Every structure is written in structure tokens, then in C-alpha cells.
Amino acid sequence: MNVVVLMKPIHDPKVTLTQAEVEGADFGIKEQHMVFGPYDENALETALQSKDKWGLQVTVLMVAQDVPDDLLRSVLAVGADRVLVVPQSSWKLGPRDLGVVLHQALGQVEEPVMVLAGIQSGDWDTGIVPPVLAAEWQVPFVANLVSIERGDEGWILTSRDGGLTRRFAVNGQFVASVTSSGTNTLRYPTMRDRLQAKRKPISPLSDISAHGERSVTLQWVPSEARAIEWIDGASDAEKGQRLAHHLLDRGWIVKGGHSA
Amino acid sequence: MTSILAIVPGERTLAEEVWGLALALKGDRLLALSLDEAVLGPTNGGVDAVYRADGWHTAQQVARLVDQVVKKEGITRVICPRGEFGLMTAARLAHLTDAALFSGVAQGSQADSVVIPIYGGQVMADVELDAPLAVFIPRARAFTAEVSALDGATMVLQASPDSNDPDAALQLLAEQQDEGPQLESASIVVSGGRGLGAPEGFERLERLAALVGGTVGASRAAVDAGWIDQSRQVGQTGVTVAPDVYFAIGISGAIQHLAGMRQAKRVVAINADPNAPIFRHADLGVVGDFASVLDGMLDVLQGQGEAQ
Image (cartoon, each protein chain N blue to C red):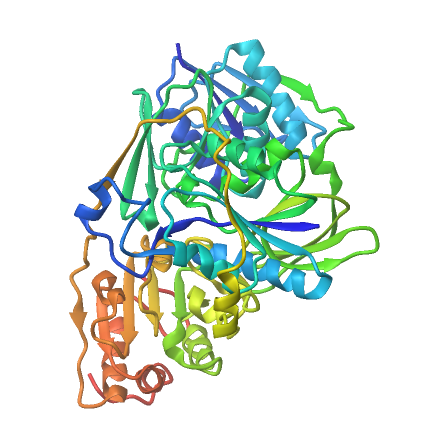
């Protein structure tokens, strides 16, 4: 039985984008600062915990072009059993087209019991690809998953969305998008894990083709800095006192109450 | 000819966003399918036909009702509300009708393209629409329209059970809403990040929030560290907030966090690192140890501080 994790290399969100990068031909494909999305990592860790508890296999699936080998092997080093890559850029695919491609690829996974996803950059950050895959696969979908347990006849899924906690039972396959929970930060590999990762399989799925490429024009948006006013003082405590007075004087806050 | 169908939920904010996008698209015909008995429509009218969905329980059932209207009325554009149910309805509908699907739409016009911000708003993707039927979901807070109860003839569509409904395979066992103020509607948000150093750092934030009538939020880093519950997370996959005042304390200012608080009216940043990116997005900034700075603030707010 396989847990399938959707992952996608993206531009490192900690590195500020430049106009040249965004408007270059390799943006989102083969860049200097490529990482897996942080929520994809949460999804992978959730899958690895399922492997630890119930002995499930973990297959990472991605639609991506020219992924650096060390980045691919990083998911194998932390415990994924194999990686399947549909070797094409997903930038020109609409979210639905990408969902159709992922569904085709899923057909090549033996006994998939669940699909866990972070946010696919191919869906332009909007979280729509996991539900689209659920619709193509004709299975239920749960958003903001934070934990999975075994039930009597299937799975018990817990989601957290804002302040709302929900528990679901599902008896069969499902797709879920995973959010950070405080317990699913991706583990670190040991040196031994890294060496073993070199022997694990990375399989290109080159017989899967996408239809419906779209014209997508990317435009860099210069970050608009606010005009900051610095609050200074002889000590940090004095800075804090001055800040409080500033806020009160301007009516941004009132004691025990509400801002202007 | 562009015929637009707005799927209107009972929740007013979401309905305002749906109608905002529907009006921005400037179609030739404008129709509504309401998911609620109290049908909400644009205050100034202009709606050609109103349907109401009755007896539905799942996204698949709603998608089937929408499909009926699409076929009967020759709809070319469907707008679904954001949120988990809206996403799933849009996905089921796209599968059912072989439609293109675009989520997070921030700009739309009669022209055959939509604009979707990506990378936390650092990049705008201008996407061409070449599909005969397209389903849209608006970006949070990108559109608004004044709505009121809609008068006029309403055609009621009755949902029917579907033995192959995949959504029916999901059984809700329990549901619990946290008590206390909600982040999304808070007028003051006091957020902490990894710079707090330990979960205990949030105690000072709680005290500040209590004194100014605010609500405590957090960055993803603080949630990942297990210092605070995920429900407090502000950011791209957390809550998007637009308070009057946003305190970013020990938060570096990662893109995903900025995406969730960029619309704050005022931003106050406190960070030990003078080069933290958050200062580019702040109106007031203090470089220093957050605990000492907050202690100074708390002294003043509790009536003991001196410095002016």
C-alpha cells in the first residue's frame, strides 16, 4: 500500500525574487534557489509518520522539469521509497490540466491508499490542485489535514482550519492537503540515509502527456516598502515605552480597547 | 456571448467576493445560483435569473445542479466562492463539465484573461482563457460588491442523492470551533515568530493583546516549532488578516507570512535583526530584544511607564 505525496520544486520563499529571475526563461524550472515548498515538506513528513506507524510505502510524485538530482534524492534520504517524475514544466498547465496529469501518473502507482499534498506551485499557490486530483480520481478531499489515525474500517482524519477542528472517517482512498501542525516538520536525514538514498529509484514517467497548455505571462511586482519610522531609546525597555506612547498618541491603540 | 453564473453562498463576505468578481467580468448575462434560502444579490440589481439550490449536502450535489443550469442557460463562466467547499465544488464541476479552472483570481475583465498573484503577490500571472467554459474562484478580499436580499423570481432546483457521490464517503464525526476572538476579523493582531525563542515568549504577546483588545497570531515558524496552535497561523495557508494594526514580533518577514498580513492598515515590527525583511513592510520599527521592548510597552499600558 502506497501513500503518494505530491511535491514540487519551487523558488526558495526565503530568497527575494528579482525581476531578472521572474522574467527569465528558467523561472520555476531550473533556478539557483530551488527547494520543495514548506507545505509539501509537511505532507512528506505526515506520510513518513504513516510509514513509521503502519509500514506503508511512500511514493513522491511530481510534475517538474530538470530537477537537480540532489534535490530529488533529498526526499529519498529522509525515508521516501521512490520518486516518480513526470518530466515537464507545469507552469503552462492550468490547475485542472495539472490535476489530469497527476491522475494519469497515479495510475502507475501500485495500491495508492491516499494522496497527501502541500500546495502545488503548478496551481499558482491557490491550493486547488489537490481537490482537482480528488475530482479526477473520484475520491473525497480533506483540506488542512493535521493528523491521520487508523479507524476500525478505514482512516480517521483531523483537520484544523483557523479555529475549527473537524474529525472525519473515511473508508477508502482519499486526497488531503496538509498544513503545518507543529508535529509535521520534516525530519533531517543522517549521513547513512543520504548514502542509502543513492540506491533508491527515481523513475521518469515519460509516457504521460499533458494537454491544454496555456499562455501565461509572468510579471514581477516590485515590493512596495512602507515608509518606516524607527523608535529609538537608551535601552530596549525605553524603546518599548516610547513605542507604546507613539501608538497611544496616534490613536492606533487605546488602553484596554480598540485601535482608531 | 458571455453568460456568467455566480454561485452565491449564505455567508455574506464570500457572497460579496463572488458578486464582486461577477460584476468585474462584465458579461452579457448575469445569473445566480444561491446555496441559501436568503438569496443575496448585488444591491443595484441587474441579475437576469435566480436559481436556488435546495436539499444539497455535498459539493458533488451542488456541482450537478450547477451543471444543469450551465447546460440550460448556455453559461460560459461560473464563479464559485473560496473556502474548502467552494474549491471542491469548483473541482467537481470542472471534472463534470470538462471546464478550465482558475483559483485565486485577483483581476478579471471582459478580455479573455485573468490575473492570479503568485509567490505571495511577488509575481502576477496573466493567464489566457481559451476555454468555452471556465470556473473561477476569487482571491480573498480582492473583490467586493454590496449585496442585499434579492427580490425576483427564483427557480428552485432540488438536489438528489447520488450513489456514486465521492463526497458522501467522507463522514463528519465531530466539529469544534475554538472559543474567543477570531483572527480573521480582529482589528488588532499581535503575532509572534521564531524570534521569540521559546513558547513562553507568547505569554508577553498574550498580555499585550489583552491590554489593547487584540488577538494573538503567529508565523508558520512558530507553529512548526510547536509553540502555538496552528489555528493562530497567519500566512499563505493560514489565516489572511487585514487588521487596523498588526504587530510582527520576532517575525523575519518570509514571503508566505507577508501574503497573509500585507493588507494590514498599520504594521509595527519588533525584531533583534535590523536587516529583517519585515521592516520593509512596517510603519513603525523597533530593533531590540522583544522581551525587553514588550516589558517597556506593558509598563506604559499598565500605567507605570515614563518615557515619552
